[in-house]
Image 1 (cartoon, rainbow, N blue to C red):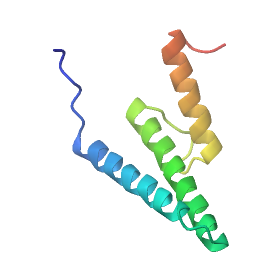
Image 2: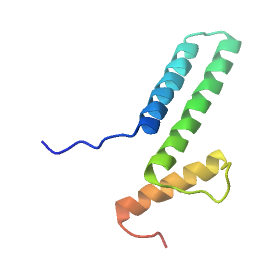
Image 3: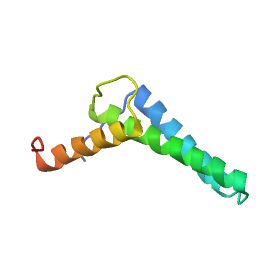
Image 4: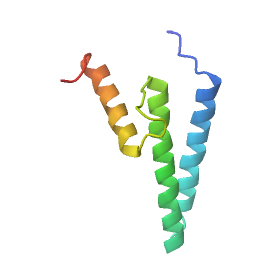
Length: 91
């Protein structure tokens, strides 16, 4: 059996936090009131943004500024994974 990659403590903590954020969003989605749906949407947005940040951090993506926008994170992670799939820099 091949050795499984070992995650460092900050990554494990980040994964646990992401799971908590996603579970909170799921729980909030059960509230069918207008306010409940709004809070669920905000919670889900936060979980998605955190997931993008975590994907960027664990794959070595760097950003031009300290506070990248959601679009910056998405584009950088997408580009990084395209590079890994193709094996070279995009043209």
